[in-house]
Image (tube, rainbow, N blue to C red; front, top):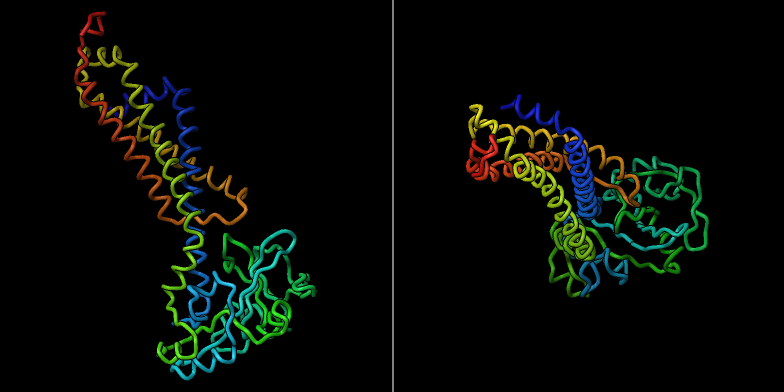
Amino acid sequence: MIRLGLVDLAWRRRRFVVVVIVAALAFGLALTMTGVTNQLRQEGRNTVALFGADEWIVPSGVSGPFTSTQVLDRSAALAAARAAGSDDATAILIGRISIDGRDVNIVGHDPASTMSPAELRAARNDGPDGAIADVSLGRRIGDRVEIGGHAVPITGEVADTSFYFSSPTIFLPLEEVQRLLFAGQDVASTVVVQGELDPGAVGADGFDVLGDDDVLADFERVIKSSTDTITTVNVLLWLMAAGVVAGIVFLTVLERTRDFATLKALGSTDRAIVGSLVVQSSIVATVSAALAVGVSRLIAPSFSFPVNVPPAAYVQLLVVALVVGVVASVLAVRRIIRIDPVLAFGGTS
């Protein structure tokens, strides 16, 4: 049955080449959109995990530090953290500006704090207190960027710190962000804390305490409508690709009724004929899946933000393609069984 399937593929090679190309394009787009969704979700996790906090102190009533423009008194919040039993605490100030028409996140932090991210300490490398920019900004060390009307030198680079649809991030000492964007006020967006706080003590000072899960949930709330839309489109792409493979298998059965009747008349069993279809569909699905990986990598650079395809998506691609091919072949079994060998001699069934 393997030989039968291969011979038929060779005979109908033009049709199968077209099917493979169409299915590969659809699977490739689906794979790319999976990477887009994964990137958006991964950004939130990376951002929340960056400072290694156990809890976050925010202004009362604020659902998360990354989605609100409200600020708190830095000194008062640090004092509240110490009074509530923190092991260590540091303030973060978050702002947004536009550089060359691109939205850019500005994050102020305390480079001297033991809670300062290791990535930032390594990038700063005991150099001058300039800006550390994510590589996605497209600027090099030594370049200058205008922040709050001042030219600030880039003295270090980091990766995978972008957030809000992969907007680049620039890290500066907290006092610099206060001076450049907040008129020198001693404010912060949040105080990140190591250790478990007494919520009652913090609440008495007009602050709320959030856990990592709370901050992440709030972060993902902002992008939920976008990720839901992308997910819907992605599902439709997977269905379209699957439909292409399934459709060609079923149409092959419909148009080859006389061929199958001839094979039966020559002694081929239903099992052998169905097996040849399974072989064909598996080959088409496998080749389409392999080409889809190339299609995805080819179109990914055209997106305005990184496409981060998880390894599991490649496995999913191959499994979906094979399952669809096999299922389509099995669905054709009933029709194949009903084919009468007399059709091979011009009769009617």
